[in-house]
Amino acid sequence: MDAILDFFSNAPLAFRVLSGTDDGGLLIRLGIITVLAVPIALFILAITYLFTSRLDKPQPTKKQRVDTLRKTVNQVGSKIEKVGLSKSKKYAQFERLVKLADYPWGLSAREWFVLLIAVGVLVSLIVILQFFFDVMVRKTNSFPLFTFMVSPFAAVGVLLLHIRSKAKKRESVIQYDFMRAFNRLGDLNKETSHRMLEISLAGTRILKNYTPRVDLFKHNPVAAMEEFASRVGTDEAILFKNTLLYIMNNPENKESQITRAEIGIQKARSADEQKELKKLEVGFNSFILGPFSICIGVLCLPWYQFLKQELGKLIGW
Image (cartoon, rainbow, N blue to C red; front, side, top):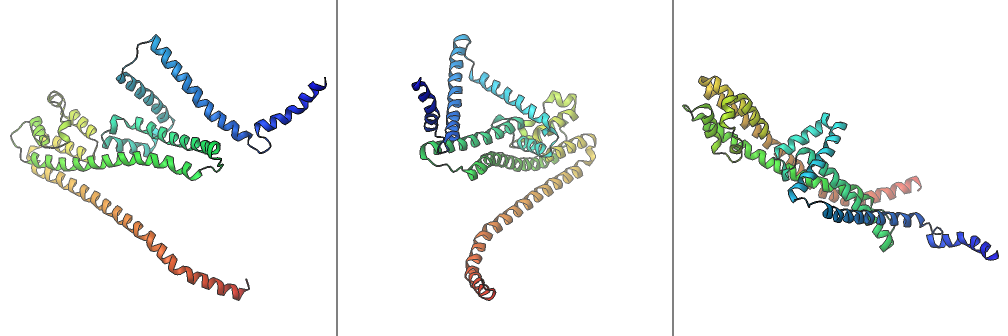
């Protein structure tokens, strides 16, 4: 009886010693155990599922796996769009940017959006796991708040920068292609409508890949040119579409219409160049302003300390 009483009386003390409640480490240890146990359990379940599925079903090909993954991503993206992104102007601009970049890595705007969210969440989880590793191994309890806040945005920013760079490069090439196409279009007189379109786009780098098919153009030229402008995805494509359709209906005003279109493209390109120059000017000023501000601060620091001491003497600090 005395032994049973001693066991129950010493049980709370033993629990405190084993769990670390006396020094406040119980929650940290439980958190570390949870963070480590959950991924390991999921990994074991995934390995078990893979082996059992291989025994029961034929192994899918690489293309089938990619298609399945893209289908899942599209389903997730469609659900996110239904929440409210479809009406967002920012999301519409992002869709136009991905389209202008010609869908980098073969991913649509919806797939890119899901990828950006996944990358941000993954980087955040890596920072949290690194924190628990530091707590368990290096015995440091300080949470990297700055890294946790900056790293996801930096990772997402790198991907967005990749999309923007490809879109900018493609847009520049397309502008030159349309200028070349309009120049050739002005030299053609006796060709048929589709032949005129085909020759004008033959010497371009990108636009020749979007030339409408002969049967579709002859059946419905307006719909064929609409599809052409939609696939290219720029304002210059809409201008080229309207110009070509106008020339087909009014061949006597061909020269004036082409000249007007060329002037429009040149103005758009000049506006883009002005924007780039302004960005370079702002970037240069920002680059110079930082060191200049530091120099001014270093020069003013002794005077600030001197005035502070004098004012302290006058006020009686």
